[in-house]
Amino acid sequence: MLRLSSELLKRLACFPQSRQLQALEIRGLLHEARYHSWGRATPLHSRWPLPAAAPSQGRSMPHSAAREAQDMQTRSMFIQTQSTPNPASLMFQPGQPVMGETGSFNCSSARESMASPLAKRLFNIDGVQGIFFGADFVTVTKADDTPWAVLKPDIYAAMMDHFSSGDPLFTDRDAGNASNTMIHDDDSEVVAMIKELLETRIRPAVMEDGGDIVFQDFDEVSGVVVLKMQGACAGCPSSSVTLKSGIENMLMHYIPEVKSVMEADPDEAEQAGMVEFNKLEAKLSV
Image (cartoon, rainbow, N blue to C red; front, side):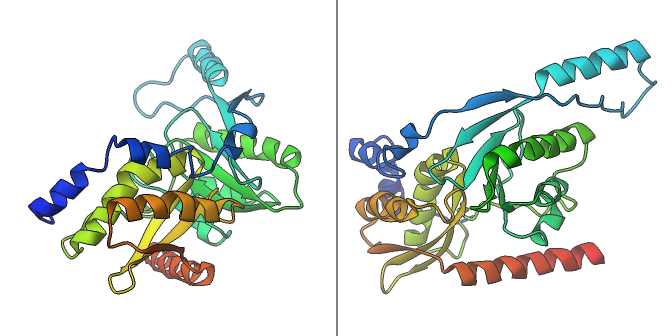
């Protein structure tokens, strides 16, 4: 584990609860006031009955008990939707953990979705172009010419089928993305500070909008931080505001070595994603 110097620890201690930081973060500049005009979370109770889950051990449940368990599950299972600053993306919250504390998962093609039964179900729906799994939500990104009114019923059904089936989220336990903000032994002190600030102050705010920020690189000569946008943040009309007015200002304020923040080139990011997917595919085929 990286040993942080006393100077780094002093600088990290300045991050939380600063009035100036609070003025820069979350709803202030990350997505401006536009978010509030998009509406709030609307609970949409499921109208599709869920099959009762089969007991994993012990004797079979009596028919009446199984039916009661099914009825209770049907009544308790509902999905909330929440608008995001990106009109092409919606957050779907099943009321239970999705990734939990294990990281996040992003895929932008049907091929990449093969690693996850849930993502595969969702990509089988015409008009779905992107899937992002967060701690307790799924962000779906659609094609511009497909209305949400057409997609929502199929998305609800796919999610409910998955969560009632007992299927794992991934066919391989290493398929999800581990946190890219973990501090490693070979990270410089500046990179460690960037990752700490991203992890504790920026990513939680971005995830509330159904997306994520992935750290990719820091050039110590130019002072440029390269980040990748995922989920609702990818292709969002306000992503440039998020990067420049929110994230860049915050990083530059607390880390003088940072001079600018740039979004990763989409083609390069996609190529990197395909490399990781090919590794996973090769592992599964063994």
